[in-house]
Length: 590
Image (cartoon, rainbow, N blue to C red; front, top):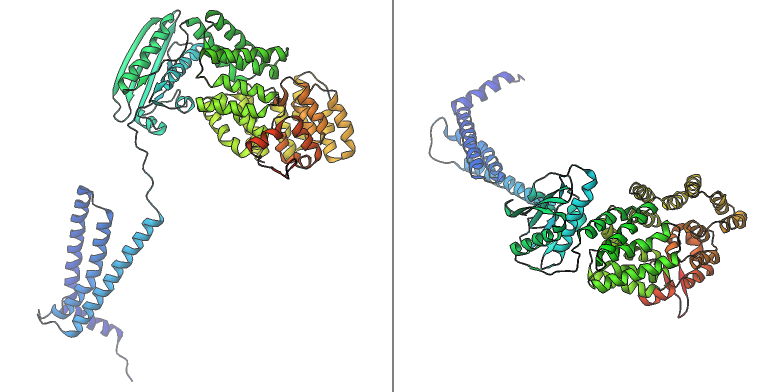
């Protein structure tokens, strides 16, 4: 049987398509559709129509193409007006198919929108009475005057916090823009404030030029701007004027707080406050001298009394001397600060710390809570309360206080070291080591190697622990085999007596307490606390590390907890993370 030639079939089909004008109708439709899409794209861009309009229009035109080709097949060659049943069925089927495609597309678009919601827009700039004080630029040309420009901005910030109804961004969040340039509106948006105060300071001898501008962040326009060319003794008048102008512009009430009118006292306080976060003997001794000089100029200066109390309570941990007299002087200074300014939180935190050192944890906790109620933004109160909670075993609760303290006082080396200890207790060893290194960079290096040794030991790096501890003793001029013996005793209990005997030859300190705990000698640990005037300050948080887990399960641990006064706090405040009561008079810890 003869098969028809394929080429002949193709030629026949092509001839029919041309005769019925299917090709012509298709080309004309495609040209018209392309022109329509160009017009639609123009209007979409001009009137900012949604992109979905163009997408649906393109889909409709594509669906229309086969319908046009069907119509051309039936009507192209003869121009018939009558619609046949077969033609109607094909067009209806194509319309149903096209409708299904459009429905599926819209459904897919809705699902995509739910699965991938639009990115959140940038937070709007607030419109309330809120402000951030940016660091004032030091235009003096002498880096040694940096403390003065920073200190002036910080004093202005403190003054503004006393304005009733005014929200003031914390020092650390605003001071992160020091030496940075950027759009004021963006800075305000990040800080979530409606206004920005910025300025510059140029100091020359006894004269100072201060420029300050209050900017409305929503439009970048100045609400107020002023330059002051004054003698240094007029600095307080300038501060009061700037705070008053801001209060006036933002329609809030300025509530005065005790301060000083003595420019020399003010300058000495700024110098001392600049040194204090370093937490080392030279810096603290120089701070004490500067603050005592400030009080010679103005004995009624509450802030100077408070800072002096802080320095005095820190000194026994970093310098030699008579701690009993130092603590007595610290308490007197703190009570004098409270007498002069009852609204200050910092001296209350100091009194809390003294109670904690002497084992009255319940009173310490009460005073810390009072301090934070007075001023939740006081970095000392947040820092020391976090430390108390960590020592007492409330590791989870301490976290937010530690983070807030770090945000408020990021240049405090001791605070970073404590954060490292907290991370170490949680098993986050590499971040812990980074925090300890940061504390050293900030000048707080006395106890860095003690903590680093604990972290290395917890990591399983015994040689690294010995190296760190040896470096700690070498810096103090002490030769001892205790670090090596402690590590050996942990691996071989038969070496424990030699290790403990070696620690007996050392002055009581953090290393001796830590070693006593991880070697399970409660009596030695309690004696360290009792021998030191700074008492529980030596404890750190080593009792809550995994290294001390075997010790926590012993009767000796319960004996130590009772000896340092912690059990009373637990029964009043609630039980810490790793302990629970077992009856009326006992407890267990994991």
